Picture 1 (cartoon, rainbow, N blue to C red):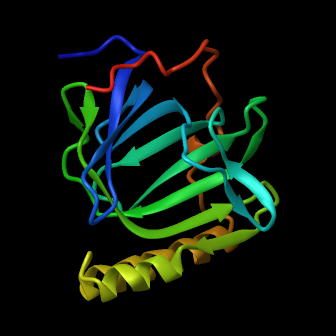
Picture 2 (cartoon, rainbow, N blue to C red):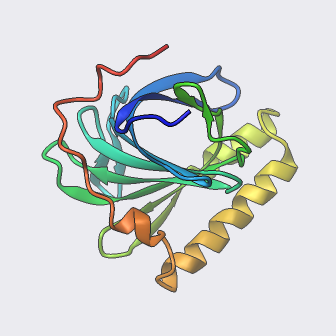
Length: 184
C-alpha cells in the first residue's frame, strides 16, 4: 500500500541494554533501500563535540535509514534551522525498513561519527562501546564490526565519498513541528 507523503512515522531505536524507544517524525521519502525522516530533536541534555553543541531539544534532523547497512545518518540543524553537520550512528543492519507506521528496530552499536560542515571528523563514544562489550550488552564480534565500519566510513569521508549525495542535497521541509506525530 502506497502512503501519501509526508506522513507521521515513529523511529524505533534501541541502545542495549535499554528497551526500545519511539521517536516521532515525518516520513519524507521511501525507496527500496532507504527511508528519509525529518524529526525535531528532544534530548535529555545537549550533546557537545569539540566545544560546540550539535544536538539539543528543538534542533532538527533529516534521518536516512538504510536497509542492510551498518549505519544511519542524520543531517543536523540547530533550532534556527541552520545546517551544523552530519551525525552517523553505527547500527545493526535491518532487513525490512517499515512495520506499519514505524521503522524496523534500529539497534545502536554505540560508535558514532560527527562530521562538521568543513569536513572535520570526530569518532564518538569509543569508551561507551568498550563498556558495553565489558558488560555483555553487545558481543565482541559486533564491536569488531562496528569499529571496522567506522574505519571504512572515516576513509570514505576523507576521500570525499561520504555522506551520500542524497544526504548532502536534503533540505528541511517547512513544517510547524513534528512533535504531533504519534508515539504509538
